Length: 115
Length: 114
Image (cartoon, rainbow over all chains, first blue to last red):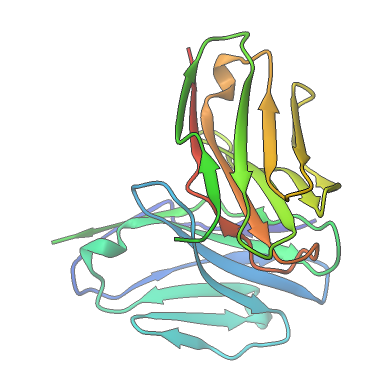
């Protein structure tokens, strides 16, 4: 069975703090993809990153970075020097490769960055 | 802006009614997905179409149906509406049918059933 767990329901930080959002997944497949999406208060879902199971390199994009560790089935997301505009719900999702496979979503982590 | 458009943005209707939500995918994308987001159930996959054909089905109720037209836009029909159908409905698109492709989401349609 596939499952995505985002254990942190809500996180509150002060601006400029670093914050890490955890994502732990379960799958029996060897080929799969992991995603992070951001849902700001306006409601839209914004794609942040896609990572396949064969690429364990960490990725950095500006203040955002992702740590993928197959050994612990985790795909954690770190925001460095957080800003108020980072306040949003962040979702981690998993899908197995191949046709007709659906995204399995975590329940999301609500991040509040306070000035 | 993801390039996926959805109309209407907001919809208020009464129980028992029927509504149609519309989605236009990003230019060049052939797959369309529908999701429901509610407070108690989170994001739920409803259905996927690829180039006009149904490819995958999720937790879609029998009262709900969808189709993808030759111009690739898609419509989600919700009938015999109940209070519990109040939710945010998202459409997403991707280039092909594969599960691992990135899905780009539209802004959503917020449905309120009174």
